[in-house]
Amino acid sequence: MRLKAFLFALSLTVLAACGPMVRTARQQRAAGSVPATETTRVPAAVSATTATSTSEVQAAADWVWTYSQAHPEGFTVDIRGREVPTEGISVAYAATQDRHSKEDLGEVVSHALAHDGYVGGWWNSEESLYYFDSVRILPESNPSEAVSFALENEQLAFYVLSTGEEVRIDRVIHPHEPEPSNLDGWSTVFLAGTIDNGNSEDWQQTVAAKLAGRDRRYLLYNPRQEEWHPEREGEMDYQVHWELEHMEKADHILMVFLDGSQSPITLLELGLHARSGRLLVVCTPGFYRYDNVRITCARYGVPVYGSIDEAIEALP
Image 1 (cartoon, rainbow, N blue to C red):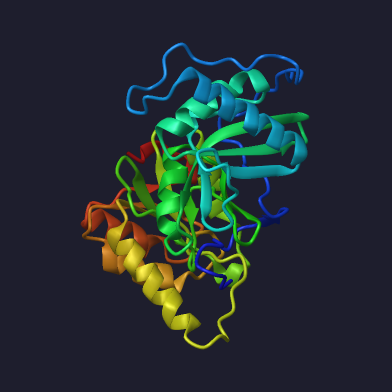
Image 2: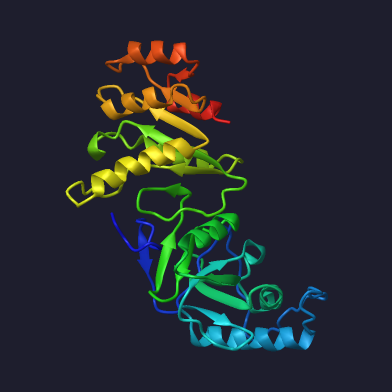
């Protein structure tokens, strides 16, 4: 599916303009909110880089709290200029996660004043709680930077201010989607194998779910598009070049041959990368060219596994 550069081709949730921020991957617990009459807690020590006074933090926190009461659906604000930005990509910092009440606002505001000066709020209807975050606003013209920052801060999504859209992030990159500009600390894996024009088992989703629970950080390149339109002009060329490029730059290539499939393109890719030292192949005797795969892999030292679970276990 071909979307604007910053719209990932993932499921989008359209929210109100200047709408809510979204929670991080670790924000799973619920806690009671604090009545509006309570005093905002201000940290004893504010970062020396800002020389921000306690009174300034208190005033900004009070202003954010008042603003949030008038915008229960969510917001993003500039606490230095007391303004509401209307353009950019708003991404929350992990450092201020799980701040959901007025008494937490001092910490959020202190962090924001020491960094970018922006605070976001969003209503979690599942928990009936309002969350506050120190946020960074990145240019909409460079969504890759927003992706990198969101992944670095363990965010599940970011928010496009000009369009009022929430863009989900699942650590899987598909064709036509922006990619992180910084991959330091990430291990990239290309998911090569049976697709059968989208009619085969979605084993790529299984791999993504299993790797999500591991301590190591993986970014997956998945060539399977949610909606494949080969009739579009240039689409076939784009898809093939995307796959070739991402297989060449991936740290590892997980290649899966499903029983009952023909997988001619995957066989071609096996030949291209058999000498790369980056292949992990899943193939069983039920695949019609199993012996060809087995013999070729043995010749070039490519490990062959009997299941996806075995291959994932062996993935560095």
